Length: 251
Image (cartoon, rainbow, N blue to C red; front, top):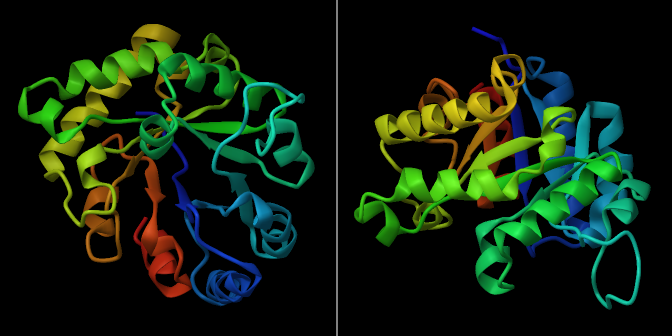
């Protein structure tokens, strides 16, 4: 079995102002004075803080990521941020296709794939999100829904570049509810099999598959121990340094 270094990414969503960087200072202190983390650590703050997180986190190994990017490199797109802009600000990762973007902004798999391609073109590592609704799971469609998202959202360039897949059951995001460990294992095994089918065993077995959706200090250790779970995409718990450090330490 290929060994994959785990990755823990914090998605601050639309939370955080300059004062929030105090939590980053605290996290850096915990990471550098406690046991060395066994995971790659990424913080995806609002775009207004990407440069500050990249600069402040560098000395402690914390990397910065964006929460979204436009598919175009530049142009008349008021309010949008391109992948090149994120890279210029010091980001190394970017989330694309989060369910909140898909729902709130009508983003399709085609949009997500185009954004992932833009991220790769700018030298960023895209974190491509997939996941089913509660109704789809109840109807027994979870695996087929996620398979379709994977097929249409992941660009062919993933065969030659690093991309990360984040499985986030939509009904678990921010609700405090999580799938059973068996359900997580089944979905991650299905995702792994589809990555291998598409990109071959050598590449497909090295792509990280993160779990997200009410991942918190209380359940992190058991979820991160599930086979084919190569880290986590953390929402609310990433806003507090001690909670996020507990999750990082659970790897």
